Every structure is written in structure tokens, then in C-alpha cells.
Image (spheres, rainbow, N blue to C red):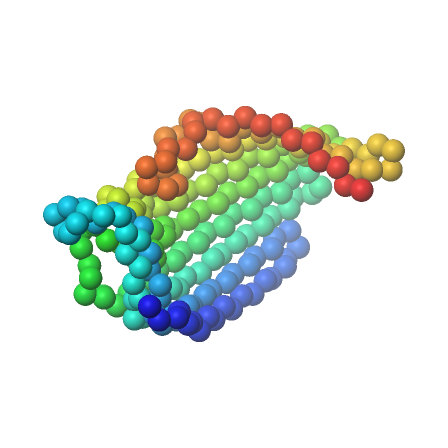
Length: 201
């Protein structure tokens, strides 16, 4: 097993307008001797069937992509952000490819979108709505994973007491009950309710 080495390049720009802020970034990673961990047991038809991590070097891997984000502010009450991420990769074959193997870069979604909107209902009381889209992608099990969209809602209230600042929030993640997996074989809960209290000294 050879040590992994890489050249990494990132470039970004931020532009502020009167009510709008735009941010763009791009990245390119050129990796030699990428350490790939399959983490899957070899099936009996391919060998002994004993467990193995199947660690191996991939001679050359390239990861590249970009992100575009825009934030808008309308007065003191409304703020919204939209972000789009695109990423790709290219891999040199190792000669050890089988139906039960996979490349770690293959598990990355090609397209992702995030949306966030906040509205101040009253002083320091913010209602928040967010959503996330993740594109289809491969999995460790050799089967494709479906794209999904989740929606989260919440409310946050800030207040001061005895010279300290407090934050109280309630939220419900995946409010639509979307059936999805972030990691193959592990279903995410349909609804996640929560209550948080924070303090700043």
C-alpha cells in the first residue's frame, strides 16, 4: 500500500450587491495512489467468503466540481439562500474491479441543491423553512440509490435575560415524511421533532 498524495486547487469569488450576495467556487483535486476501501465481504463465489476491507491503491483519481450560492435580503424580516453543488470524478481502473467492488468517489451525488428561507415574525423570532435535493448515486451494495428531497421547518426565538443571550428553538426535520437513505441500507427517520435551548455568555 503506497501513501496517498494530492494537489488540490480551489478558487472562489464573492460579490455583494444592494440586496443580493453571490458566491461562486470551484475545486479540482488531482490525487495519486488514492486509498480505496471497499469495506465489503468477498462473496463465496469469488473466494473464501471471509471478511475483508479490500484496501487498494487507485493510481490516479480526479475530483472536480463547483458551487454557486445566492443570498437575498428583503428589509429586516426576510432572508433566503439558494445553493447548487455539482461534482464529478474520473478514476483509472485498477484491474481488480468486480461486481462487489466500488470506488469511494462513486458514492458522491453529482447534483445537490439547498434552499433556506427565514422570516422574522416578531422581534428576534424567526420562522425557518429549508429544503435539500440530493441526486441519484451509486452505493456500497452495487445498487443505485434514488434521489430525494427533504423539507425541514422550525422556529427560533432569541432573548436576553440577566445580561446573557438565550436562544430557544423548535423544529421538525423531514416534515413531508420522505422515505430516503443517505447511506445504503440505513433508512432515515420519517419525522424528527426537536427542542433546543442555547445560551451565550
